[in-house]
Image (cartoon, rainbow, N blue to C red; front, side, top):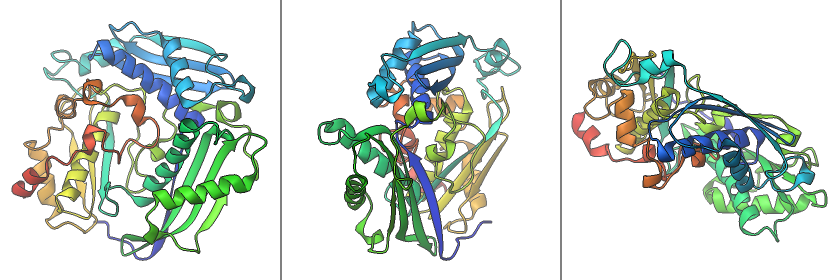
Length: 395
């Protein structure tokens, strides 16, 4: 069993919606959203590449929806803020190549109800997925990745809401937060790194002052002291950025997408995949379970792992680790999860309990997950803590 470490520093990073990998993620998830709008049974595995004035969309998609892939991609890029051709990537001017074909029939028969060797819907692939929660923040997320997300998210909000004042901010950005822990609790911020793409005329101290102001608004004051080390655009210049500065690919920021390196991580990315792919849906379910366990006061930290075989409905294994912080034995929590009465971990059960095929009627969309983390924001159904009382009763 894992134990809580003594005093140490832990670091996590985030990237903005304008980072080239995140541009690719958002295009892939925008296409998924468009497919699900008129066909909730759409099968989508969409991969996107972005580079200088070019978008390449590929993958396997089977849908009854009439999707204009090029139009969806250009709209997503416009909303991110890439609208000026002089920075090397523009929604209006870039070329868009579409290379899409249908899902393999061999995969389809394993994940469609009533097909394949089993009568119920099986997992879309083999693999292991993890969910994590900790009581160190109100969102039950690890502090370093949570505050890293908030820094770049707030900078993006300023860039979009007041473009006249913040004209010098361009879409690409990165953040990194290092936090000192003692006995498993965050006690102070050690350092903050922010690299933000900018216009050639921006003075570096302008961005540094803005970052310090945002830090005061997004990170609790008890964690900030005069000894915090700030590294703002540490190379001194970040004018060339976005897909023009670095090629972007879907699924290349999986640690940013999850818990910032805290806990374990499965092998699969999320964006561009419909909910039949357990890489995505089971990871959401594991977070849902872990968060409810911590919210119920049954542990201070919790990691849940589930593993699947392609075409098979029930997980081949479930593991719970509370890092020695549980108020009941981990084996008891394992038994509660295995019986399936509170959390149905079959693909069809996950999809139904989190309503993953119909996001729009519940006020969220998959493209919203594709920047600033898939976890820790209450708009998503896997962030609910509606199983707390049932868990308490069960143990």
